[in-house]
Amino acid sequence: MKNYEFWFCTGSQDLYGDECLAHVAAHSKEIVEKLNESGKLPFKLVWKPTLITNELIRKTFNEANNDENCAGVITWMHTFSPAKSWILGLQEYRKPLCHFHTQYNEEIPYETIDMDFMNENQTAHGGREYGHIVTRMGIERKVIAGHWKDEAVVEKLASWMYMAVGVIESSHVRVARFADNMRNVAVTEGDKVEAQIKFGWEIDAWPVNVLVEYVDSIPDSETEALTEEYYRTYKIVEEGRDPKEFREHVKVQAQIELGIEKFCKENNYQAVVTHFGDLGGLKQLPGLAIQRLMEKGYGFGAEGDWKTAALVRVMKLMTEGKKDAKGTTFFEDYTYNFVKGKEGILQAHMLEICPSIADGEIAIREKPLSMGDREDPARLVFTAKEGYGIACSLVDLGDRFRLIINEVNVKHTEKEMPELPVATAFWTPEPDLAVGAEAWIYAGGAHHTAFSYDITAEEMCDWAANMGIEAVVINKDTNIRTLRNEMKWNEMYYRFCR
Ligand code: MN
Image (cartoon, rainbow, N blue to C red):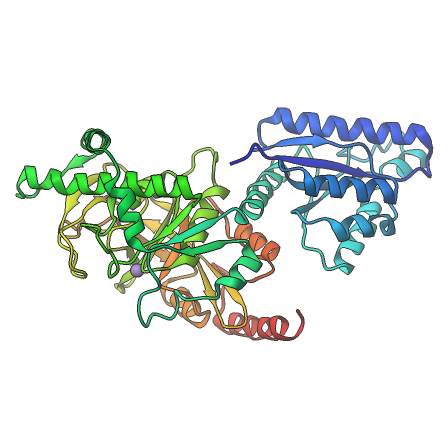
């Protein structure tokens, strides 16, 4: 990922003289300095000279477009800035936009306030003038209101920055498909051309045997070294299997991990899809190999699910460098617990769950897959951390994409599951299992999801808005009747208003 920065642009006008403009510049410089020093923002703010003319505004926005390190512009109207001045610049601007509705002073200086002070510190009305034109032009932006020293406000800025990086990075995601979608499956399908138009994703098919050539080209010394690393890092659970044969099977995954990584690096891919039914010359379904690659930041989708693969990649980038991050992974809804008071969904996949979400020990086990025709694959087995997260599903409704976001509460299962040789999570969707599942199904959500503890539903909604697609949130406020109406109205909007 690039060393991203965000530009801080302050709006004003020359009506109140040079002294006022000097104060405006000094205030915005101080805000940028203090916010950078606070350590609360994940990316650097870059101060830009006060914007007071149409020409400068247009020039600055175009420079922001062309600056590879600039991931977005934060605008602040210190004084009144007539908004027609912003039209051309905004029209040409293409990156995430934030309207920071703050002001230099926190409190009204009751004793000393006079008209000069009011003219100089008029965010309350300058911000409304500017906000009006952005709304009238239909430009997507984040409005954050509050004092710039308030920690909650700074947190909102930080959260928006992570989201903005997801927007910028989305158009650099390239997915290698080592198989088409699983036969007859509808929900993992989609319009790849539209995905490139909306998200910037490049989604390419490759014969799986090209990958096999990469895997076979890995020298045994490298495969041996990685196998050793596996044996040092994870708990080996042989369960009565022959230790030598067990290690040979693990080694197959090590070679696949190195082969896929080499392929991705040489051909510039950041996400992959596989299919248990289309493995060519691969000896095993990539399991442990995919789990390790996801941990390194690659996106993944099973059974040809390129939408989820790209989404996992984007969500991993949106959490990169987050302090105390708890993990992001591909998941699949499997089995319910309908016992009253203990309701939840067991999440897993055949093999491919990212160990970034693991709570405690990670084991390597080998078991037959009940599908496909290859040798028993090695996989990392663990349970997920407790805590809140979001499960996201991107579906193609034929005339548009819809992103469904469900807030979920991950818990430890009541009892261990010793016979289940896969990584799992158990979660209760908000607002509860029944409404959560009903809402998800009404929304057309898939069984595959991209899950993260480290991204909020608000961030994903803002990301979807920046991509120009529909987002549906299922959370503690969800009411089925209201949600179904919302989706009907959305249908009108996306069919007839865009
Ligand atoms: Mn699946």
